[in-house]
Image (cartoon, rainbow, N blue to C red; front, side, top):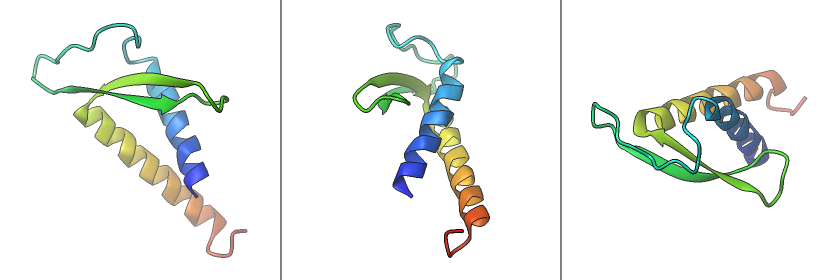
Length: 83
């Protein structure tokens, strides 16, 4: 299950990476004061590569919610016996 979680998180991060600023740019604070948090996440398709993703606290919370919903969908589809 942790592998599926990592894969889903990677997809979610990849989907939002287009909306975020580049990793080289210095993260800035939002006008409403929401703090920007940068995290290093695994790069999909590579065992060693990582990339830095900067999102606001609210955006990280939304990512976590999306991840949880996707995992729930997978659990419902596969059922308790795995098939």
